[in-house]
Amino acid sequence: MSLSLDDVSRIARLARIEISPAETEQTRMQLNGILAFVEQLQAVNTEGIAPMAHAVDVVQRLRRDAVTEADRRDAFQAIAPEAEAGLYLVPKVIE
Image (cartoon, rainbow, N blue to C red; front, side, top):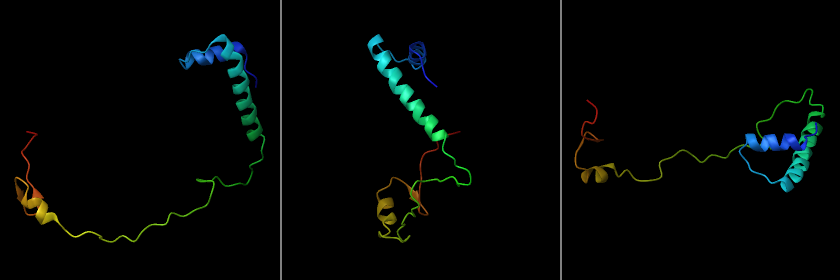
């Protein structure tokens, strides 16, 4: 597929991109290069190849799920305006 200068101007207008007449030819060549590459990719036989989620088959190393900090809830609630049974009390905002 090859784009014409009118096609490039229309695409630019639809994308709300202002390009000068001098840039139109360069943009046409770049877009045609992209489309030629897409056609080349579509020509590759992918029969029997499973889709991949990632190009490299890696596994995320996760750290051990453990508490690493001391419990400071009582210290934080001591300076709160109001707290009860480990919960912060706030004014009612919805009737």
